[in-house]
Length: 133
Image 1 (cartoon, rainbow, N blue to C red):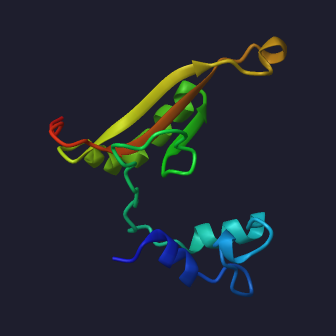
Image 2: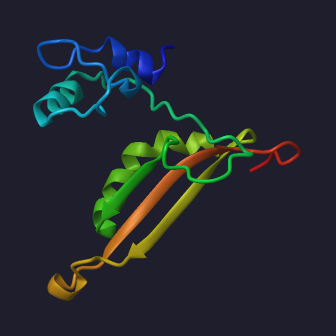
C-alpha cells in the first residue's frame, strides 16, 4: 500500500504536475480552490484513512502530526463523526486515540450569540508495558 505522500506525488492537480512537497520549493506550497476541488473529486472512495500515530515518547507540539479538527455546531460535528468511524480502530493494544470535544469561546460571541464546539482526534502509540485498552 502506498503512503499518502506517495499518492499525492502521483496525482496530477490541475493541468500540470503540482508537488505538495514544500521542502523542494522556496515558497510554501498552497493549492488553489479549483486544484483542491479537482483533487478531491478524483479521490477514490475506497481509500482507507492513513493516520500515522504519534510516538509514545513525543514531547512538545503535535501540530505537524496527523490529526483531525472539526469545528462548529454539535449537530455538524455529530454528522461528520459517523463518516470517520474507521478511525476507531486506532484504539487498540498498540495505539490509543487522543480525543478532545469541548465548547469553545467564539470571537464573535458578542455579536451573534452562537455557541461553537471543537473536536480533536489524534492517534498515539502506547508506551512499553502500557498495552491495553
